[in-house]
Length: 467
Image (cartoon, rainbow, N blue to C red; front, side, top):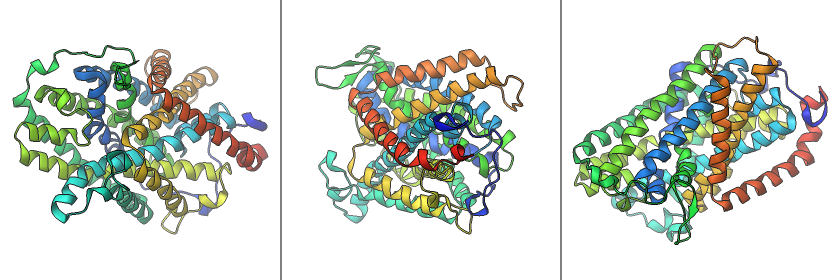
């Protein structure tokens, strides 16, 4: 099919050696990649933002966001095993619907991953800055963005550079380091639950929902409600989609992708429920709302300074796993779009080690600027808009393929597909409408820029159109 609705073939065509990724990953790497991406800034930092918007009912916000993400994860698992190509939602949309829709989703993923990397780097800086000031005497003005009265967030820029360097060394090496750091991060959360559980006080859950369920504007000009919180802490659950970008670098994608996507998602839901309940039960939510390091603050408030230091150090050590996972996904989305000629082809060349060095450096430059100067809450909200779009698109592609090719081979079939797909699509739409209006406006403006680039460059160079 030619034109804006040109589609890619379901079976990947042969690509030139300089544009070919090397398969080196197995399902343990993918589960570690997923858990590393999902467990991070969302629970370590954004639980404070969510509590400020919903009070103790932020637990309900976690449940709502988790259910929607679980539905999307099941759709991803089916599509990833049907179309084991790198590119995630962008590639599925290209194969199932067509080029223009794929461009919209690819641009949304670029927005998502760039902002996630930047947001997590800012969250990492929130834990690293107090340690650096205490141990090395580094001025806080060089470790906080303008929103906190600083000049530039240098720790955030530094950690992005470190992760970019690791990814350029090699995919398997990056995955091995990631797996080790994921163990550190999960252990820190287990310690948090164990230490705070004896301090659990049910009175801290009263009143349970002080700001109501639906999103509304509070008298202080802040949007509040359970759904307003869910729309922000939705950020805490995604990350499994980064696994789908690893399809071409997976040794046995038909088996390993479904294990990595579904397994990492449900492991993280269990971890989040335990941590959120213990956090709110330990102290009143007003004491850690909007803190850049809420879990460490909670531990200090209950007199567990040693555990707080351990958690902060663990966050500094392990939060880069989130940056690595999303940075990896971002570079692969850029890479595949460049290989399809919707972006400049020169960005799609790999090094002698099989890694896309050019695209990694390009990505690092973008996210470093965002992390250095933009506040965490704004980064998270805008990242969520891109993610919600991609999740809904994957669920839509799954439902279309169930009708178009019901007998096509599927090594994983989403149970109750119409219901699960409907939950993913309608849930993502509702969460999108629950985002701040300013975020929705920025999202639309970002896509206007994307359309200009597509019609100015991508549409004239597209391989699918030429084919």
